[in-house]
Length: 203
Image 1 (tube, rainbow, N blue to C red):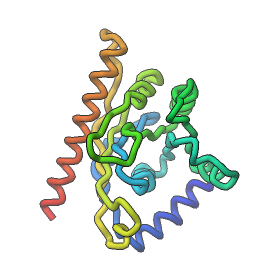
Image 2 (image 1 turned 90 degrees about the horizontal axis):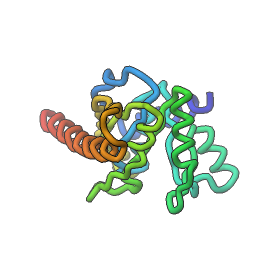
Image 3 (image 1 turned 120 degrees about the horizontal axis):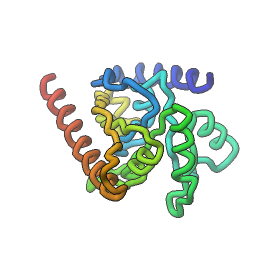
């Protein structure tokens, strides 16, 4: 109930300030659970991706520092996020998202770990979680404002989804599967971004 209310309020505000969201290939989302994976370029993409898959709720993996204090902890928990210690990840970094996926829900992970577009380094965490939970990965790319100032300038927002990536190569060793799928995910991100760029040129 809180998630639906907050989504509606924030969506209206961003729509009035920034305009419409152009969601591409949403029809590719045909099942749950899945691991939503996207390069991390801005805190705004967390919000816009949540809009893009609504009414499905995304349970984001977030650094534990964001849960400090009663108010922040309450808000993050009600938004469905769960904490992870990035500097010293323990078993919960894997167990918590797997448990959520086993419940038929959606987990959101930004594999770069930072809001940097340059030299994106794909951590295997997202692929490992999907593999162990036997859930597909849904790749997505966000192209839009990086800060609130760009929202006010009504910079267009594009979100493009790719095809599910399944990790069911049972004839291969786990290490080989994770390496192969990590590379496939990186290639998919590049393809989706190129497709967005092509769409923008047609405008």
